[in-house]
Amino acid sequence: MDGNEDDYYEKETFKISKEEIKGMGISSLYNAFDTENNEKYLCKLIRLKQFKENDSLYEELKRTIQIHHKIQNENFTFLFNVIQGATNLYILYNYIEGKTLFKLKKEGKNFDEKEIKKILEEVMKALI
Image (tube, rainbow, N blue to C red; front, top):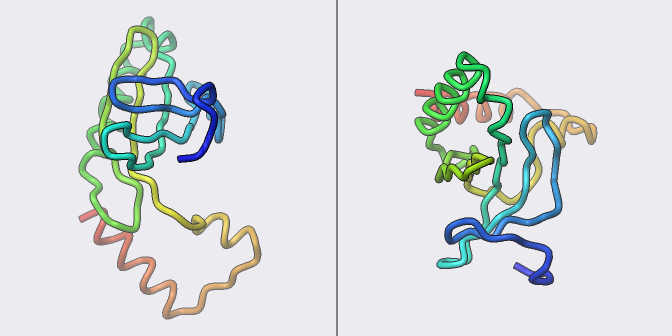
């Protein structure tokens, strides 16, 4: 991965970009890579302070992580690793090159029936 060393911070064997891709309320999304094998990942950083006083929210987070861990399909991001720090939870997902369906649709892509069928088949494979 290109970039200045100051553009990343390390957690375990992962370097996580300091540049946020997307903020999502209690979490933020960053690019990351494994310093041992140079694989690229997405890192969802969740600030744990929101969960300290809300047990039901923390239980919901644990259930969500368990569900994400079960989804294993080459066409979807899947949970690779979870690292808990003192103040943050780092959820690492595999990185898939290319555009999302949402982005393609936003750019005006129209999917024909054959493409929609293939997409739905892949979604079903991931969920089964």
